[in-house]
Length: 88
Image (cartoon, rainbow, N blue to C red; front, side, top):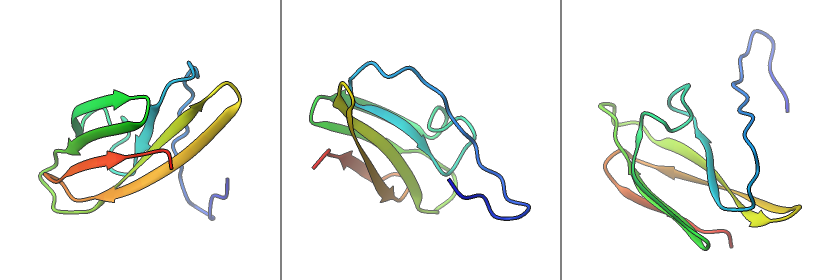
């Protein structure tokens, strides 16, 4: 993790239960708690949409895996547009 001089990063600590999960977004400090809507999580995908009054692309970070094998994925989406993130 690199943080530039005078930069700020939000670090989320969450228990790993071996199931897919949204790690966060780059839009709000809640990491998706405010801007993500209709989120559906399955073993092979995370789907939903971003709700925001700003027409600005949002990066969503998710993880997939089991045990100690974890794969991170990112998707950049616009508010109002449905998204699907898959592990592969």
